[in-house]
Amino acid sequence: MHKKSDYKLAQLIYDEVLKVEPHNSQALYLLGNLYYELKENEAARDVLESQALMSQPDVATQTLLAATLLKLNQHERALPLFLAVTKSTPMSTDTHHNLAICYQRIGRFSEAASSYEKALELSPQSGPEKLGLARCALELNHPDAAIEILSRCILESPDYFPAYSNLARILDQRGNISQAATVLQACLKNGSHDTKIIHEIARLQFALCHWPQAEDLLRRSLAVEPENINIKASLAATLTHQSKLDEAEILWRQTINHRSDDIATLVNYSNYLIERGKFDEAITYAKRSVALKPDMPEAWTGR
Image (cartoon, rainbow, N blue to C red; front, top):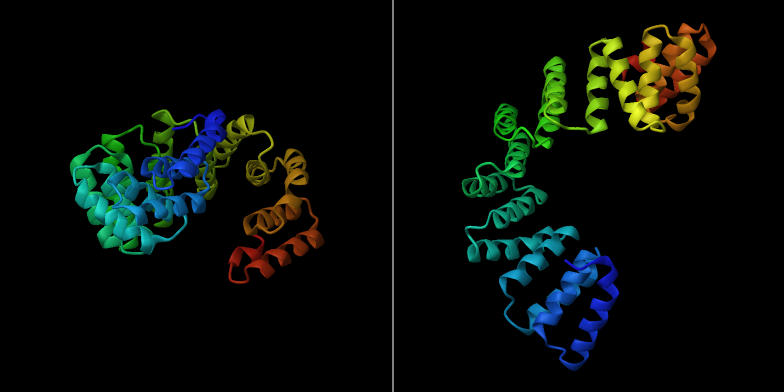
């Protein structure tokens, strides 16, 4: 990979080479790779495609061009390239992984799952392959299989943190809120320092009406991200439920205008106003939440 300070120099060198030798396949590949690193994906595609037209593209060129097309959301064009690379390098985990991603992007989840399984045969401990396989299982309406895959991934690769958040999301969607919180707590215990995980546990504790636990987690998050509006709004709602209204008021003043189109925030702020006895204002904010989502019962009740 080029150093950032060398990008301009490298581009000048490749351009000079191509002025003299416009069919120099190595210079074309390196220039395409440079554009890819710079995230100038259309330029990378054009250069790599021009190289492919001049001569039979090698595996490296096919792989880079396929990856570029994937970034440009040209999945149908990327697929035959990934298939060709897979035939050329059948023992490469990355090759099967890339093919699986391409299949996923075009909605062919059974084929994607098969590609992830082949990748896992080559790299049995690979967390990304197990996560991809679990996501395919979800798309194929096999949530129990997804839960099993992610649970096994956590046991075998406890430091692969995306598995925890994805497993917790499935459990939460199935109504297993307490289990979801337990999974995320294990994520923190095993070394994750992601404040999003802490915030998500707080959200689950809030859903379980465990206000003190939610408050503690949100304060931890806010200490790391003191200007985070989402955390402030969540903490304000948690304090409201504990009748800590003076501190809640300070946080609401800082957040409500920034989240005026968020259903949960409007409902929680309406609850706060009710606790303050400001019923007319509460009705105003409740009406806003109803206008945004009329089929949400909490928007109508304010509770």
